[in-house]
Image (cartoon, rainbow, N blue to C red; front, side, top):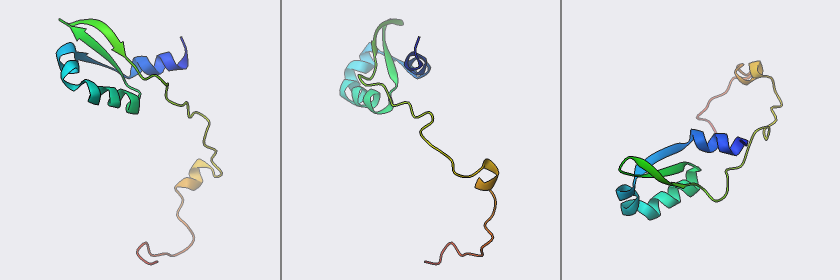
Length: 85
């Protein structure tokens, strides 16, 4: 199992075939936009899975903090007014 399989399994939603039929195009856009997987059911049994064609990007490690965690919440040593330009 890959990281993508874990991600898909944690973002799965069930929907009835009737609801899928009524909202098909909108649901396809949602799957593509959110990366969420849909499981379409008939009479309570899963019949098909709709998942994004391109997996979402793995952003792990893509941000590098240049300050320590304690510095992120420390007040500045400068007086300032948030409303002034």
